[in-house]
Length: 547
View (tube, rainbow, N blue to C red):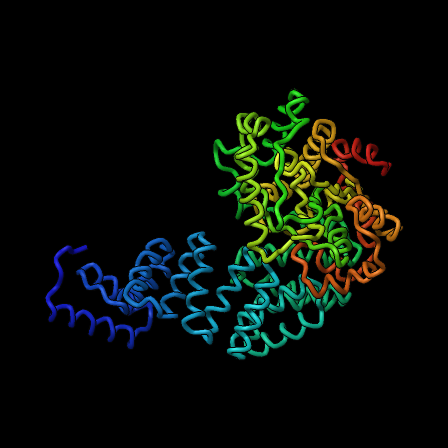
């Protein structure tokens, strides 16, 4: 960049050139001239904004954010600059800062529909689906012709099993833009959930033939085709479709998940298992004392197990009680747990954690809980995160009075369901993208859980998914008794309450339909496909009494 500032006349010429290019060629043409002006030392709000948009369109998101921050410094309350800054921060992997930028844009202009929509996208990525839906609803209320939030709403409602709203929003989006991919995916899901297989198949196959389908959307469509074949009684074809969907998602995730020298989730679980098998039991028998605080819950419960083991159903049953407040898969513990679990040295430090350090880490945890709008004071607070089962040593040292609800389900159904369903990707979910990977990870986590049960002085209660479905009141009562909560007949209405509060997991549609046995024994249809992983799963089938 030219360090010598241009003369006022030269500056004016550049500004006129940028304005003319923008009026004639739009953002793309104006942005390129703006970048030339910036190289000559011309820094103006409009020039910086157009330059930032040009860098964004090139995929150079960090540079875009740098230019837009300069524009913001010159015009701190310009909602369009703040919105563009949020988009750049979001694209560069800074969702928290992006949310701040969108919030500032909305404060500057609460009627800026694009800022509400973009805010919703970030919230959706952070798995705060209720807040995302609210942001999309606001965007559509401000601009009825805005198709993107309508399509996103249709997709989220379809995932949650709210067929009526999914169809309504999907048809609204298609009326505005018949080719909209996300709306068509949502409508295909609706047809599938209603059992209209021919209609669902026509929509899905048409989508699959489109060359413009993004890789992520192709993953979703291929997975729904698997569901279509499954509903049609064609397990071999369904399994092939699930495998194709997962292979595509794996290819998209390999770069982030298979980093040379970085420990995988499976390797970590196996290392921690080996370490704990040799650990001094006495060092885990005691924990630093906890000083009670007014904001503490009446009872602190962690609901853990393995994905697709019935934790979502159980959590929604328990959350239907008026004395219970719960947090569904909003990861509050990992930030605290990671430094201890990522190495054997960290486990050594955790085993001898001081009272001061434990108190500091508890504060970090509770601040994260409160950031999701949860106020557990005086309530029974349930933190539901299935794979927190790996983090139980951290819970034992920081929250020794906490109680552990451990959910189990037929291991064969668990592993098959993990392979069939689509999760927000992280290094643990990456292990589930192949049937062999899912079985190996399940086996490793269950082995570690057994060692924890023997080594850690945590009160645990095991709840069986099939028992909850087959003998609801007896199984639910036992869980409430374990938590010290009196029985309430109101928990029978858990499905209605679940639909009202929103569910953010792949189990959403199933739980919204209430108690049903549709997931029990699903593995039998895929017995031939599951044969290669049965040697890993059979010991757990027998151990948990499913033989």
